[in-house]
Image (cartoon, rainbow, N blue to C red; front, side):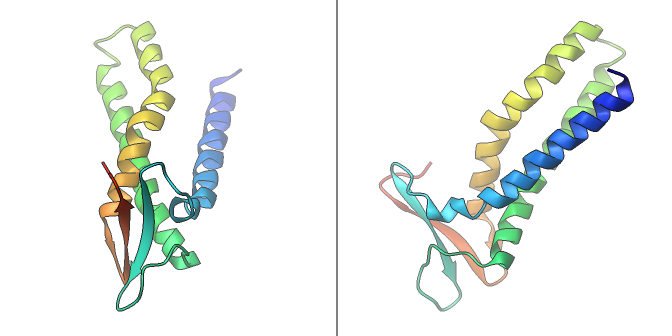
Length: 131
Protein backbone atom coordinates (compact mmCIF):
# COMPACT_ATOMS: atom_id res chain seq x y z
CA UNK A 1 0.00 0.00 0.00
CA UNK A 2 1.42 3.39 -0.94
CA UNK A 3 1.80 6.14 1.69
CA UNK A 4 -1.05 8.16 0.16
CA UNK A 5 -3.38 5.16 0.28
CA UNK A 6 -2.34 4.49 3.85
CA UNK A 7 -3.08 8.11 4.77
CA UNK A 8 -6.54 7.83 3.16
CA UNK A 9 -7.30 4.65 5.10
CA UNK A 10 -6.10 6.23 8.35
CA UNK A 11 -8.12 9.38 7.71
CA UNK A 12 -11.21 7.32 6.95
CA UNK A 13 -10.72 5.30 10.14
CA UNK A 14 -10.44 8.48 12.24
CA UNK A 15 -13.51 9.96 10.56
CA UNK A 16 -15.51 6.79 11.21
CA UNK A 17 -14.34 6.68 14.84
CA UNK A 18 -15.30 10.29 15.59
CA UNK A 19 -18.63 9.99 13.75
CA UNK A 20 -19.49 6.88 15.76
CA UNK A 21 -18.42 8.66 18.92
CA UNK A 22 -20.82 11.50 18.09
CA UNK A 23 -23.66 8.99 17.77
CA UNK A 24 -22.81 7.33 21.10
CA UNK A 25 -22.46 10.60 23.03
CA UNK A 26 -26.21 10.46 23.61
CA UNK A 27 -25.76 7.13 25.38
CA UNK A 28 -23.57 8.81 28.02
CA UNK A 29 -26.67 9.91 29.96
CA UNK A 30 -28.89 6.98 29.07
CA UNK A 31 -26.60 4.23 30.35
CA UNK A 32 -26.75 3.00 33.93
CA UNK A 33 -23.18 2.48 35.00
CA UNK A 34 -22.39 0.01 37.76
CA UNK A 35 -22.07 2.60 40.54
CA UNK A 36 -23.42 5.87 39.10
CA UNK A 37 -25.73 7.55 36.61
CA UNK A 38 -25.07 10.77 34.67
CA UNK A 39 -27.83 13.39 34.57
CA UNK A 40 -28.30 16.61 32.62
CA UNK A 41 -28.91 19.55 34.94
CA UNK A 42 -30.33 22.56 33.13
CA UNK A 43 -30.64 26.04 34.59
CA UNK A 44 -33.72 26.17 36.86
CA UNK A 45 -34.91 22.69 35.89
CA UNK A 46 -35.04 19.17 37.29
CA UNK A 47 -32.26 16.70 36.43
CA UNK A 48 -33.01 14.74 33.27
CA UNK A 49 -31.44 11.89 31.35
CA UNK A 50 -32.46 13.16 27.90
CA UNK A 51 -30.16 15.41 25.90
CA UNK A 52 -31.13 17.73 23.07
CA UNK A 53 -29.17 17.66 19.82
CA UNK A 54 -27.45 20.90 20.79
CA UNK A 55 -26.36 19.43 24.13
CA UNK A 56 -25.13 16.26 22.43
CA UNK A 57 -23.07 18.36 20.02
CA UNK A 58 -21.50 20.42 22.82
CA UNK A 59 -20.57 17.35 24.89
CA UNK A 60 -19.21 15.60 21.78
CA UNK A 61 -17.08 18.65 20.94
CA UNK A 62 -15.51 18.48 24.39
CA UNK A 63 -14.73 14.77 23.98
CA UNK A 64 -13.54 15.33 20.40
CA UNK A 65 -11.26 18.17 21.51
CA UNK A 66 -9.43 15.97 24.00
CA UNK A 67 -8.81 13.34 21.32
CA UNK A 68 -7.59 15.89 18.78
CA UNK A 69 -5.25 17.45 21.38
CA UNK A 70 -3.81 14.00 22.08
CA UNK A 71 -3.33 13.25 18.37
CA UNK A 72 -1.59 16.59 17.79
CA UNK A 73 0.67 16.06 20.82
CA UNK A 74 1.51 12.54 19.63
CA UNK A 75 2.28 13.76 16.10
CA UNK A 76 4.56 16.49 17.46
CA UNK A 77 6.31 14.01 19.75
CA UNK A 78 6.89 11.53 16.92
CA UNK A 79 8.13 14.36 14.72
CA UNK A 80 10.61 15.50 17.38
CA UNK A 81 11.81 11.94 18.03
CA UNK A 82 12.10 10.97 14.36
CA UNK A 83 15.77 12.03 14.18
CA UNK A 84 16.76 10.54 17.54
CA UNK A 85 14.96 7.19 17.60
CA UNK A 86 15.02 4.21 15.26
CA UNK A 87 12.14 3.70 12.80
CA UNK A 88 11.17 0.50 14.65
CA UNK A 89 10.68 2.46 17.89
CA UNK A 90 8.55 5.04 16.06
CA UNK A 91 6.49 2.21 14.60
CA UNK A 92 5.92 0.83 18.11
CA UNK A 93 4.77 4.24 19.31
CA UNK A 94 2.37 4.48 16.36
CA UNK A 95 1.01 1.01 17.17
CA UNK A 96 0.32 2.09 20.76
CA UNK A 97 -1.74 5.09 19.67
CA UNK A 98 -5.18 3.38 19.48
CA UNK A 99 -4.64 1.74 22.87
CA UNK A 100 -3.56 4.99 24.48
CA UNK A 101 -6.63 6.72 23.02
CA UNK A 102 -8.94 3.96 24.23
CA UNK A 103 -7.58 3.46 27.76
CA UNK A 104 -6.27 6.94 28.61
CA UNK A 105 -7.77 9.67 26.45
CA UNK A 106 -11.27 8.16 26.30
CA UNK A 107 -11.88 8.00 30.07
CA UNK A 108 -10.14 11.36 30.57
CA UNK A 109 -12.28 13.04 27.90
CA UNK A 110 -15.49 11.68 29.41
CA UNK A 111 -14.42 12.88 32.86
CA UNK A 112 -13.57 16.25 31.36
CA UNK A 113 -16.95 16.43 29.63
CA UNK A 114 -18.68 15.60 32.93
CA UNK A 115 -16.83 18.44 34.73
CA UNK A 116 -17.38 21.10 32.04
CA UNK A 117 -19.94 23.86 32.48
CA UNK A 118 -21.81 24.25 29.23
CA UNK A 119 -24.05 27.21 28.35
CA UNK A 120 -27.42 26.43 29.92
CA UNK A 121 -26.63 22.99 31.35
CA UNK A 122 -24.06 20.74 32.98
CA UNK A 123 -23.60 17.03 33.54
CA UNK A 124 -23.82 15.58 37.03
CA UNK A 125 -22.91 12.09 38.17
CA UNK A 126 -25.06 10.62 40.96
CA UNK A 127 -24.46 7.35 42.68
CA UNK A 128 -22.40 5.45 45.19
CA UNK A 129 -19.05 6.24 43.69
CA UNK A 130 -17.86 8.32 40.79
CA UNK A 131 -14.13 8.52 40.12
